[in-house]
Amino acid sequence: MVRIGKIHGSFKRLISDVRQKLAEEVTRYINSHLEAEVEAWLYRGYHERRKGVGRRKSRAQCQRCGTREARHFSRNGHRRRELVTEFGVLKINVPRVICECGGSVRIPFSILLPGQRIWDDVCEQVARWGAMGISLRQMQEELGTRLGTQIGLRKLNEIVQGVKSAARMPLSSVPPIIILDAIWVTLLEPTGRMQRDRLGRERAVKAKKKVCLLVALGVYPQSGRWGILEWRLADSESREAWEALLVSLEARGIYRERGVELFIHDGGSGLRAALKHIHPFVPHQRCLFHKLRNLRAAIATPSDWPPKKAQTLKRQLMEQIRAIFAAPSLQAMTRRRDAFVRQWQAQQPDLVTTLCRAWSETVAFFRVLARFPHWSPRFLRTTSLLERVNRMIRRLFRAAGAFHSSAGLLAAATRVLEPYRLL
Image (cartoon, rainbow, N blue to C red; front, side, top):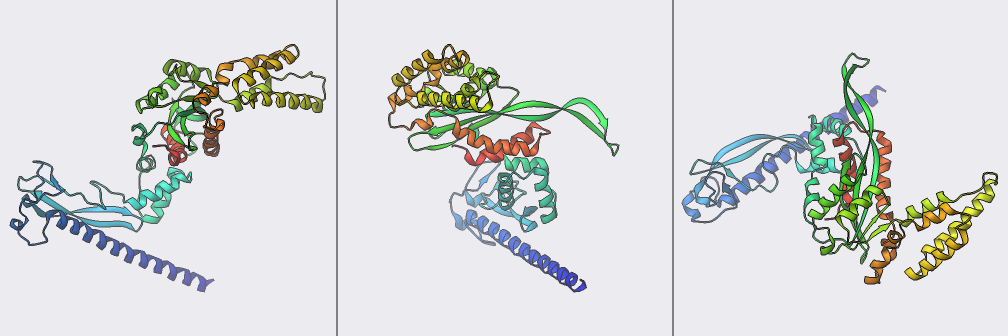
């Protein structure tokens, strides 16, 4: 045991020495790279006179007078900066450059952004952890152990959601099919009361509140390509909440005149009202999967029937219903529906009512197929693509149980949805 302990201690010292040497080499590399870039944008090395530069323009620019003429710039020492990297916290000497007017000159360094304190390698690692569903606090603890420094939870959250602003940018192309759905999750909100915990600390009392994440997904049925367009948190699936999302999408160019052909949804009343108000001339398709689920729930069986007999009746009815929706044309589907209604109107009134409810929205995809017959109907009839993504979000939400802030909830959702963003 003593021998193993000594070997383990020697190994730890070896790793520490290697990390220290790596940190020193990376520091030298960064410092030399910064110096080389200053030399490139001043068009001269150390102790070279400015007269030989002439009137050459530089990408560097004075922040006071705005000039880009390199002959007006000169070196002015260094600024010491700590840079958090995967190799540790490095001491970097950032070159300073001033203009003849006395203003500071900003050099467009390629490996270091203005004011950057956390290097790109750490940001990439945090983004990978975010995609794996690791919590911000776990990231903080791991980085603290590995790098010997503490990064705030707010900064980690900013890194995870670093590309969130791109969601408001106009799209390069507009997907013809838009799928909309919502996911419900538990959020803990302060009630305004305080209480002491077991350690005697004052803690805010929180109450559970159900909120929903509204998600929009775009589909290109020509190629099968799809991606997430936008998501936002709302208190409910009300008309106002959905209208806010639809207006935001419209601001990015998602409307009929730019090529939107169909909206697909699960039939929620708030969403239907919002679509009729914002996009009254675009067909709205009810998801057939949700329709079939509602139809199965509407089948009535006598209470004294044995379970096997009731299951047999449900299976027979659902086979007939699926045959209705498998019809190749709107006319054939309508004929099959009418025949089913005549056969079961008296015995299954609730089932027939559910089948006929919002029929125009149930068959809206035929209006699109009439214009684009080469498009695959499987992209036009259900919200299955979005449900596939939603399952990953629900899996994450179930593991968390409840979220203590809307920011943490959005950060968790972003970790799942960001890789599927459609730009």
